[in-house]
Length: 166
Image (tube, rainbow, N blue to C red; front, side, top):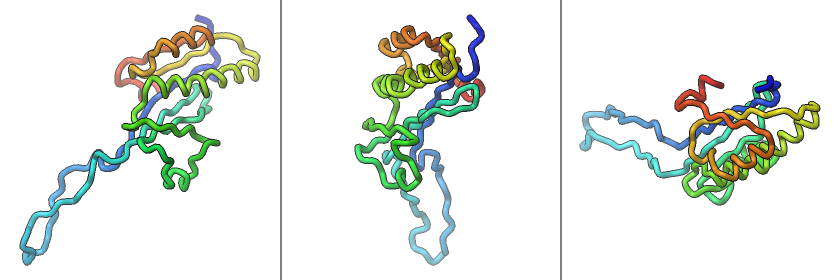
């Protein structure tokens, strides 16, 4: 394999978010006069879940991430935080998880066009190295066929090692 410039090496990783997912049991001290000495701190773990798919090239540049939300409407909190179509792709999936369709959508809309843009910008027509974890949705036939077409080498990282590879 030829030496690939850092601008043509990309690491992809997902991170899921859910309110209260790490909430642990708590004991609460209440005054003796209170009849019921136990209380519940309510939280619903079945509420909103989101997944962020981030992309960082070996030269330090970041690519437009995807946020997968479980609601069909974009929550005001995302817009309020500055997330919009200029800096993130927001997609809907019923449970907020990544799927092959979403990953293929990202590859078609972001990955392959950006590779072609960089090849023109840097005058480089060689291979592109893509590092990703073992998530099953990364291995669709469409995605792997497109990798061959665009001369992308997909490298599946060993399980539980993506944070160390990064």
